[in-house]
Image 1 (tube, helix red, strand yellow):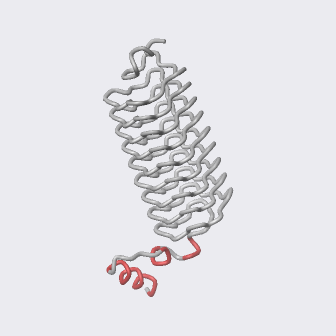
Image 2: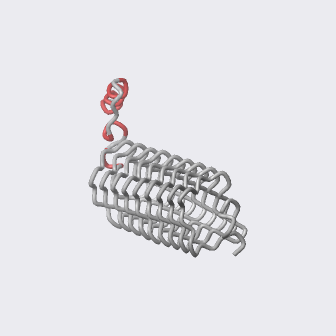
Length: 223
C-alpha cells in the first residue's frame, strides 16, 4: 500500500519515476523486465537478454546495449539518444515515438520493427537490417543507412533529407511523400520502390538499380 500511495502522489504532481511504477527487482537486465519510465541513462547492459521487456518512456540516453536481445521489446516514447545498439537484436520491437538521435545501430536487426514517428537524425545504421520495418513519418535527417537492408520498408512521409543510402537495398520499399532532398542513393537497389510525391531535389542516384521504380528520375528507370 505504501508503494501505491507513492504512485498516486507523484502521478498527481505530473512526475513519475521508475520506482513509483514497479518494484526495483523487476527492472533488471532480464527478459520481460518492467522498466517503464525508468531512468537508465548510461546503463551498461551489453549482451543482455531483454526480449519483451517494457521500456516505455524510459530514459536510456548513452545506454550501452550492444549485442543486447530486445526482440518484441516495448521502447515506445523512450529516449535512446546516443545509445549504443550495435549488433543488437531488435526484431519486432516497438519504437514508435522514441528518440534515437545520434544512436549507433550498425549491424543491428530491426526487421519488422514498429518505428512510426521515430526521431533518428544522425543515427548510424550501416549494414543494419530493417526489412519490413515501419518508419512512416519518422525523422531520419543525415542518418547513415549505408549497405543496410531495407526491403519492403515503409518510409512514407519520412524526413530523410541528406540521409545516406549508399549501397542500401530498398527494393519494394515505399517512400511516398518522403523528403529525400540531398539524399545519397548511389549504388542502391531501388527496384520496384515507390517514390511517388517524394522530394528528390539534389538526391544522388548514380549507379542505382531503378527498374520498375515509380518516382525515380526518368532517365534511370528501367535500366
